[in-house]
Length: 293
Image (tube, rainbow, N blue to C red):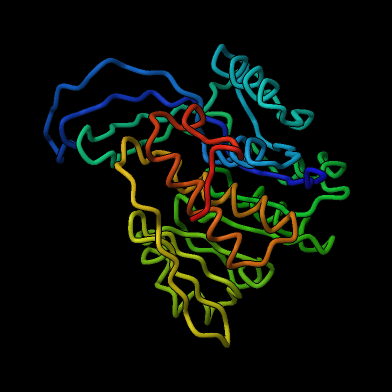
């Protein structure tokens, strides 16, 4: 089958990861394992996930003119992404995420220094208009400024392209943006931070897919009964980028024309594979490694 074209608009970070016996509480210092440097960033993670799972992906993002940015662009090319619109920002550092991963549960705590991600503008989305030609899905996340988010949503909506928004990190979005989304994919914490599912559906969201970690996925749509999709049972190693993997996988399946329930099932299976592997992009599965039960 022809690889569907997908546009991903979002962040690119370098993840500095330390495995720890427990996530530190405020004021607490813990000793961890060796420092690992891993490619990450929500936009980049979603783009790589979608590419590995069968999408023809164009990433719209910004990196700095530093070593991290150079390595990121090389990695995108290695993954087969269209990098025409991965812009380099002179004199600005690339985004960096500081991540602690619990050695027992695989859960994580993340602090992000946005760097060049904070420089992505609506003008960049306009400059990347060619990326939207023949696109079957637009994927957007929130580690970039609002003006870039809004421009990306509008670019998809105005062209009749489905728009999937992953609201992470969570922040309030105006109704006129929520109404233009095809799907919103928060995790449980993000859904609560945004006011809860009832408020989101009343505020313009048509399809709300809330990821619940090991408990699976909760689907709510206007005028329909809620549905729960179980997650495959696995032993977690690292939950970093599990939500990004889910989002990328969901985008690919919907872009391929799969019905929503089957797309969710595939995305759950892909995310379950991811959590059994360390690292953000390094742990993302390829299509042949995902089995839907």
